[in-house]
Image (cartoon, rainbow, N blue to C red; front, side, top):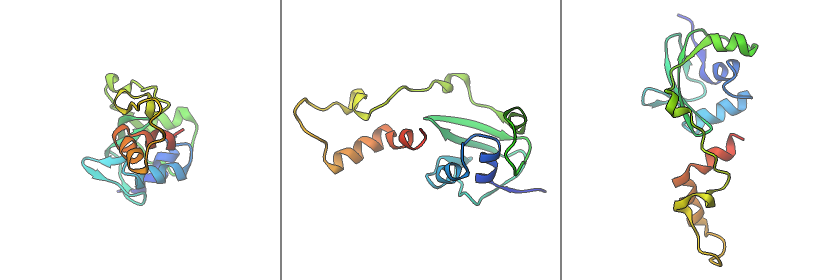
Length: 133
């Protein structure tokens, strides 16, 4: 049975622009097989079902073919099946954590403290949005 590193496969099928970006996504826990977070060096096989968080969307991907080298978009799309429900493909348009209704600050309150900023980022998942642009 053929196996391949997950970061290499994610890059090869064009889910991430660079191999470094796919490695960082694995390290950040945005790539899962079932409930298990995958490391960049984890091996995958044909038939594995992955949940990959890209741009605030949890995409459900089933591996159809393993490829090591980056190929054209048409060929890359034949290597996986996207099982993501259509209602989950709605992209939120948040450019700032302060635009979120729950992250409102009174005018004149000044900049958030380090702790407040971390709480805002943890709550809003805003750090993921910045990393993926």
